Length: 337
Image 1 (tube, rainbow, N blue to C red):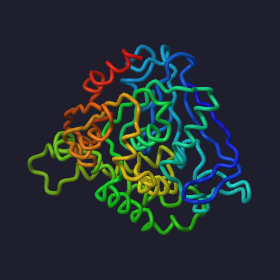
Image 2: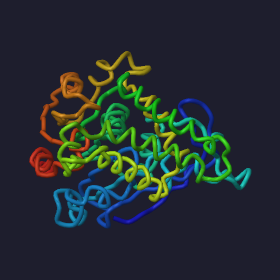
Image 3: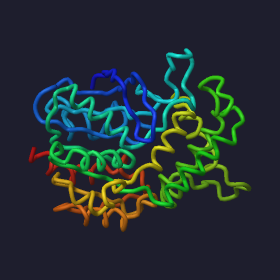
Image 4: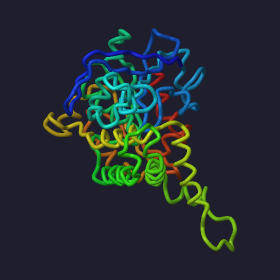
């Protein structure tokens, strides 16, 4: 897939404020015509889907980038190209930091709609979103019901739960506990807090069984368990090495709290009743972040939606790991395109 960018003028944010210009980065497969598959990425991923979903996306794969027009937009607030707090403020020549307007999920979708229109795409034959990408895909299916023909929502929900919101706040608290975070001297600020926030988040993405299988102490005589702790530190450091900055992470955690597809639309049930896409909703049986009861309830509110469930020993992250099960679920929809 090839990286592109779009400069949009006078972008207005749902929570208030506007910017004269924003940049929206997206990846698109070389095939620009034919059936369109639009993928919405999760929290710290990027718009290069082949990078983070290589088993499913690419030449000759289930989502064949040589057969379909595959598009993914880097969401606003991310540190991988689209405008956000780490972008340079033209008025100061420095990063925006906390001067950047607050971002909502609807802002992310509105940015995606700008890309869709710029590309001249009138119909999205299939939209796929997992986790936070699912927030965007659900919102988009409500915002433009006549544009989205088919949808697959994986391990996601129509509104952020108190459980998930509490996790976001705990991660923001970790960022704020790092004194360098509020100093706003450079984008390295808050790095220690970001490592801690990432470690906290990872626990919610995985499961008891997943940690038991991969981080169990192999030495029966170990005095202090350290393998899982080492793994947590490694994952925090890994995110920092990927040049994901603390300010972008903070803004995205705030954006998650904005997710409520029913806001201003008469509630969740009324909003989801307007979805026209042929929809498949997928839950993960061991997912602690989006319990299957919540995912199943959402499916019941979408006209004609079907509910499918997969098993993973690795909890929420199963949407990145259980490629065989997901292929079996998604392939019938792709075959119909």
